[in-house]
Image (cartoon, rainbow, N blue to C red):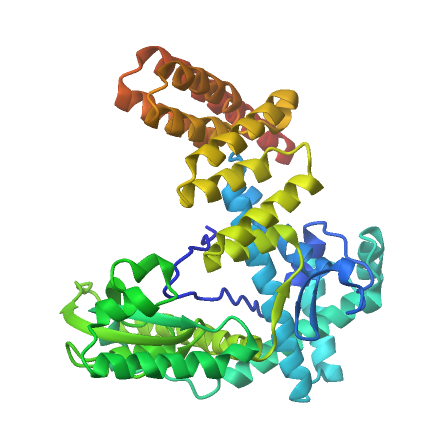
Length: 478
């Protein structure tokens, strides 16, 4: 199953996905994505972001997104994709495209190229994956997808260059029995972070982090330092409390420092993908180990994680030196939420509303931002706008809008409005098994027998349609 991207302000792990043998571009062709000539870096209307002078094209971004969405459809064919998960998939697609462009730029600077024999092996793997007899059939398939052969070949070679460069960066990595033991040890940790959000901030952020460390050394408690100075909004109020952190679950540089500290000890500033972090270890404990613990398999898992961290570090170093400017408003909204920039998130969602005036989705997502900021009045206004657009165009009506309105109306004690939204949610969830199951649990808990009966009937109709569809697909195969 797909691993959904999880926001965690303390440690962000970039989802570097470099698939050897079958590339992302082949996947896009196989799943029916169109990809034509590449845009020039100067054509900003066809770019989703710029990192310095390095462009991330819409084509590459949508290529990744088409593959992720197809994977979702194959793995969860009877589930609707919620706006929240769609936004996560869009951000992951962008990260993959950004990471690829940064690594490709590194490969070119390292003079990595593709030999004639490697090109031949690449094409052979494509023929095998797409079940083609040779170049003639490949060209015909590409033509049907509006893709030129030269563009396809260039992208295949670029993928291969990234693979070679990635392996070069990862050379020399090793895993010991001690690394496995660390995985089954947890540390109770506090942290504070001084973020680096632009290339010009690095020296200033480092100096600020060193100054904070000196203040702690002179007697300022770590908790007070985190409350006053930390840029991590998710842990700032709690004095930087991260809870229990398992070995190997953070970036390599941070992990090494954490396990070198004694209980109560405070680190010097550590450069990570977020900026400069200062950590304090409070306690440590052992985690339960499997009785049949296989050190060999554990080492393989840890090595894979370390390889990811190495690529992450390379990409982040590039971004620390080259300002990232996200141009696409959908991606900009998500980026702003990750940074905790409410004002920018609101502006981005308002821009989405202007671009898609009939869609309820930007209103729903904007309402969630207002709710996170504690402004329930504005959240309610946006949810009502989303509801009106859903009523005008039932095909885009969202059950999550009605369920969110239920929560707000419950808080305000408006029972009549709660009942009305429950009825609308049931109606719009008819073909959404996730929302139906959510409603089922709600009505079981509230002992609302009448509505529970309605939902159970809708689930029965849904399951019957799924069974009919499966039988139809099976008969076609036979």
